[in-house]
Amino acid sequence: MNPLGPKSPIPLAVLFVLWLSLGTAAQTRYVRQEPDGRLQPDTSSVKTSPQEQSKLGRQAAAQVEKQYPMLPESSPVTQFVQQLGSRLAAAAPGYKWPFEFHVVNQKEINAFALPGGPIFVNLGTIQAADNEAQLAGVMAHEIGHVVMMHSARQAAETRPYQIAGALGSAIIGGLFGGTVIGQLGQLGIQLGAGGVIMKYSRTAETEADLMGAQIMYDAGFNPRAMLTFFDKLKQQGGSDVPQFLSDHPDPGDRAQSIQKVIARFPPKKYVLDSPQYQQVRQDALKVHAYSAREIAQRQRSGGGTLSNEARAADISLSGGMRQLNQPGFSISYPANWQVTGDSQGNSIVIAPPSGITRDQIAYGVSIGTAQGNNGQSFDQITQEILSTLQRNNPDMRTIGTPKRIRVNGLAGRSVDLIGVSPIQFQPGQPVEEHDWLVALPRSDGSALFVVYTAPQQDFTKLRSTFEEMLRSLQMR
Image (tube, rainbow, N blue to C red; front, side, top):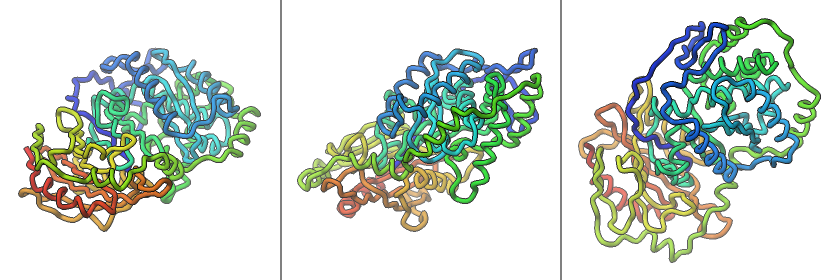
């Protein structure tokens, strides 16, 4: 199962906010306008240094390249994207980030920027862009996110979903704030099965639009091409909404926002397209791009095997129960299982010694917190968590709808899910996984989530242990 990235509770900083009214539906917060009309990023409130962001970005990029199919650096498609990226990056204002550009061999239309400068463009985006300016619009938008340090800001400002980040086939590193994956989780970045998931606020999207439009103008591209491509993606409609629009929520009237940028500068002759791009696009269309489902299956195919003897040892219980006390809750667990996670109890995994394979949970319990935005109700938070899990895990499905459950006087929700386990009992044979999710409301409007995980064929044997753990759970 793909993680919902963990986010450690960082107190909301006292931030200097300079509002710039540009007539957009979602106002900007960290853009200032110079006397000559140019936009500059206001990064005075960001506590993470550019050097720290760049270091994390490089480490994260290495993780992305390990987990996802990439076009080689020698590919003409990659080389064109790198040349176009360099041209756009040279026009970016503010700190001179060490940008680098890569192409993910994935068919879904998407692009994402990691902290400090690594930018990844899905092959499907190049296949879909009608001209060079449209591709430049997507890349300039991502450069805008880096210039505005949106990931670093997000770590300090929002905590939409704090939930344990290692369920089923998820990366257990997401549970530990000291690891690359854990730090990315704090920045709102999830390296999930089948794709990288990033969520920005409408304000951040407005700022990336504004900054991206200015970068396009300065690099010689018509900023309206950004809008044209986004509108093209919107027209797909239905359930096949491009991942780019899912990760980058529409901030409102993009046309008005971009027009405000263009109006400040003298008219100029723009580049719309080039023969080089059309040749590269034709080359891209000849490449088989993997779907998110195929990528998830590729990731799982490398899962470890588990013998019957090892499985029997995994689910054996000995030594009675032990108490785990955390700031927000306490719970009992089998004494021969191990506890891993942060000291504040926001991301905890309790698992048998051999319950984790390839940094993924095969057997065990994940505990985390979740808090919705804009006064979401407890049921809305629970549904959002389920929706996100299913969107990020193509093979996951719920068994029925969330049911009411009472745990030591608290009225919570319970739902069972079926997915694919990271382990294999026989090489090449996928194993069905059973996950039991229980959500309980907290007094501050957030929720505590507990997810019990095991292969389907062993879940029944462990259910009594899981239920005993749940009965012992006390909220504080």
